[in-house]
Length: 174
Image (cartoon, rainbow, N blue to C red):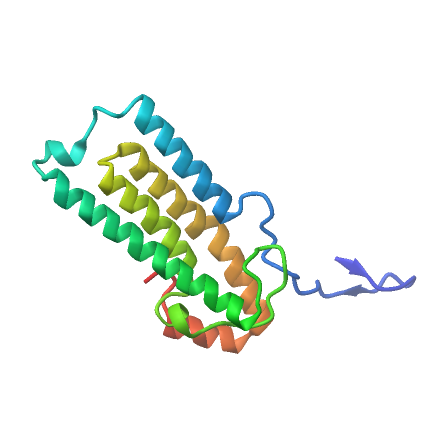
């Protein structure tokens, strides 16, 4: 709590300036989990192919994984460039200047996070990879349980009813 003067009057806590996520930022967690998955796949899991064991043909599997990854990447880019076009931040340490609710944000409140998860899932399918599947799950839970609740709390404090109405209209993921 903040003290305002010598009389030790306590004021309500100030609104946060940002979601306050400085270390475990989503791009870093994406790169680390994807990199670890790639290394584990290459060194330890190359011969383990669960989808092939189920009788799924390699070519359709690779095409499906690629399409899921490409769709996620495109959706993420759409959201990212929409943020840039209105001049608001894409980092989790700076204050936002606008609530973006159009473009990709009409379909998901978190298109960039949908992109991260889709890229990892696409890798899991394309490479028929257990480590990529684990990385997908780790990324999803990191975003869903740690990052997004902090962002939503910050945005609710920043934009109030406008943000609450937006949440009622648009899903968190898809």
